[in-house]
Amino acid sequence: MTDPKFFPECTPVSLKQIAEWADAELVRGDPDATVTSVAPLDEGGEGTLVFIDNPKYAPQLEAVHATACLTPKKYLDRVPNGVAALLAKDPYRSLAKVLAKMVPEAMAPTPVIRQGGINPKAVVSDTAVLEDDVVLEAGAVIGDGAHVGAGTVIGPNSVIGASCQIGRNTRISANVTIQHALVGDRVIIHPGVAIGQDGFGFAMGPGGHLKVPQIGRVIIQNDVEIGANTTIDRGANRDTVIGEGTKIDNQVQIGHNVNIGRHCVIVSQVGISGSATLEDYVAIGGQTGVAGHIRIGMAAQVAAVSVVNDDLPGGGRYGGTPAKPVRQWFREMAALSKLAEKDGKS
Image (spheres, rainbow, N blue to C red):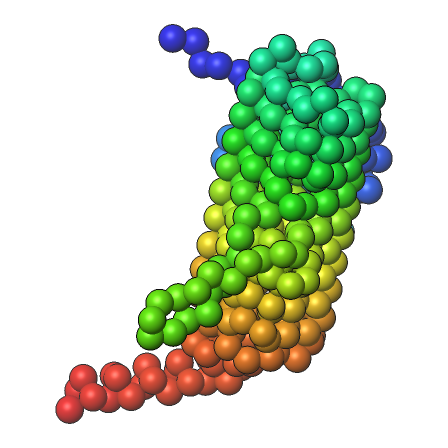
């Protein structure tokens, strides 16, 4: 069986052009030499562009075989002779810029109907509004009164509920359900995402748990990306909000009334309980739990597998259970390790 190619072959790109895209300086090599692909250090070869920014992989650099390498200044002298050197302040960001130009198809879920249009197996309400150049793939359902902006792609078997609004140039992949939601422009939603379902709200009592109707919405602002199988509950009595530019990984749970600021980063398997607030530029590592009704301040960073059960001031780095400043957490872990070692010897 022939190995499939999921993305088209790249046309040759000169190192001069690569340097412009990457905001990098070509300090060694022929500016007219070309690359046609990007590869990791240990798989580089003729026609490939590689990069180095993680010291863990520095030993591989001296043996790399590639046409060119994006490198920070500290590794420049270790790039082998014969490999063109592109000096970049942040090679990983530079690589992202290059890949976006070389393989634009990989920037978002790729539509099956590449030529555009509405698949005859899609279902569109008579009262829905579709702007120009909308793509609906097979099985897509657009509910009563929904509005889908120009250039948006809705993947197979995805459902846009009644009265929802989807912005322009948004990419919604397969098997996504959206209800009670307003979604902005240039949003990317990966397969299996569920947005706008009931929040988990019950008035508990000895005679049983009484369901509390959830009457809020979900507001997703521009340039948000939401990973596969993430769930975002609608608000109970106010809106659940995802701020502009925020990036959410796969399998994240966001409860009702949560307010996430702009340009936050939330990694896989994070759970955020109802009515929590994350201010702008917060970053949360994978498998962290955030309790309800707490606030995490601007630009705070929370390490993976932590538990946030109280407010955290902005600008700090936190970790542990419960989350605390990382220096305190590290001291506590070191003290426990010494105590365990001492007990083991007694």
